[in-house]
Length: 83
Image (cartoon, rainbow, N blue to C red; front, top):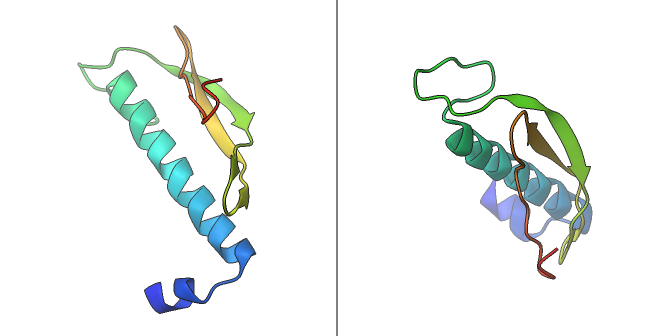
């Protein structure tokens, strides 16, 4: 797969980057909550309550990532401008 990515067009790179970023967001959210989606653990610290869209601009183009929302508090995303 790596050789295909080296010669991929912008759309393919954008899709791969978007998928990787979404996966990282999900892993970070699970770490903060103490459980994955639909998972029940004794260490759970919060609950998910949906998603909000975020459209960061990157070198490979504009991405569309779904940021988890929590019942208590917020999942903060810091972009290159600090917003």
